[in-house]
Image 1 (cartoon, one colour):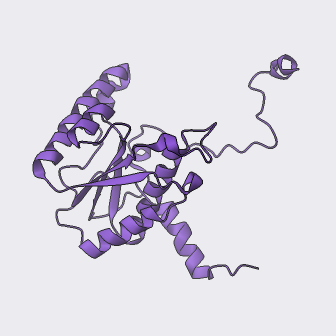
Image 2 (cartoon, rainbow, N blue to C red; image 1 turned 90 degrees about the vertical axis):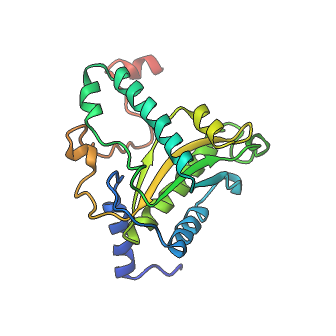
Length: 221
């Protein structure tokens, strides 16, 4: 039988999961190189379908490139507000990124040439994206355990970021990650605290999906 973690070790894992936050407020100051290296290694140890390891990381160290990414995000922020209609004004009042303040700015991307990987993707090609999401989550939890904040920015036009960063054909950005020191972690997810949305109850079904309507079972026969 496999040896489990100690009680304290298990508690630490669950604490990191429970207290992870999507951070948008950062303190000035760099992230130590050895700490950044540990976080990147945590990401690289994520599971991936067919062991394809499709993640690629672009570290943004040029101020001009950082500003270019911020402009792309701002355009999408405005477009999103317009698409939200009556909730647009409330959305514009939210702080949705900390790209100007964070110590490190990373772009997590999918590699090119993914079509060559068939194992586990023949009927579910999107599993490459799921694998990258696992890498991001690994880094997020490791950052929380290290006392660093991380925020996932997804408000951007994919092609604009791909061109700005010179990505080859077939590669595509998945997330802009803000990483850095924070004064404090939010006691609750920020969008929950701001009243944007509540935390929903976990939905667990047994054996099959429940019928949405009373007549659904009859129609399925």
